[in-house]
Length: 152
Image (tube, rainbow, N blue to C red):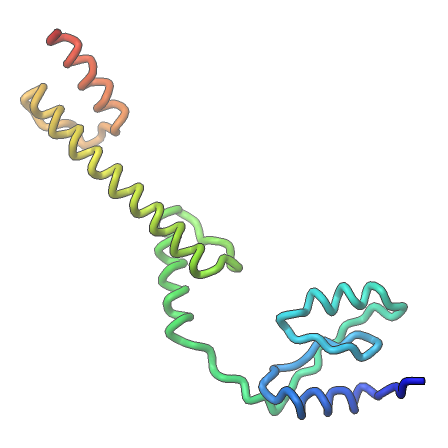
């Protein structure tokens, strides 16, 4: 029969072997899960009679400070996303996915800007005047199409 270890023995062993872990999620049968695997701890606990999951903090953890450069980059990306989309992205979005969304939106904005330049230039050629800045691309297209149809 396997020896049952006390919670104290388990945590002592864990922290001795994993000194850089901030702590562990322990189920009632003393199964240990890192913060990254918290959901696994919860799922495992569902199979037990006692379904509690306790967080046991490693007070002597040698956890490296957060990479402030990466944190600053994410903060800047979140701000840019809010500027472009009018809302912050989901907190759990990956940095690469966030960058891709921002790049895609910025490229669309550049394309739209180029289209507006083309339309306002064509408007000026046809009407001999500068287009009203309140006109959007669809309105300019309609006016240009109608003017071009008159000339045929």
